[in-house]
Length: 128
Image (cartoon, rainbow, N blue to C red; front, side, top):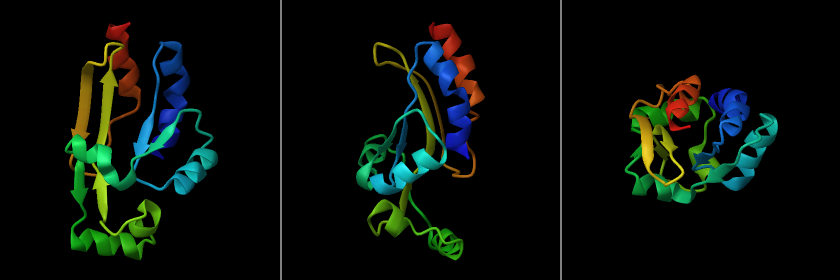
């Protein structure tokens, strides 16, 4: 759902001279399915074994209770991510200017709390 919401604002971001990318720990074959299913026009990059998330200190291991909930819901991170770590990145958004400087970041350790996609447009306006 989040990627579909980002797709809705991707044209605005592009019109403002920006680039939108998403990074996921899922294996490429599953990422491709999500891109196709949601008709995404922005790249979704694969972060194998959460290597990039680890560099940013955004990774966490799911607690056993949550792991069991995921399994009950049919969410098999071992299959989707290609490893047995049951590790995910925190939901995060970064706005980086043309010089590579992070102008805004939003990270939440609670995986159920996600930044609103519409905020991105408002945060980009002063950088224009």
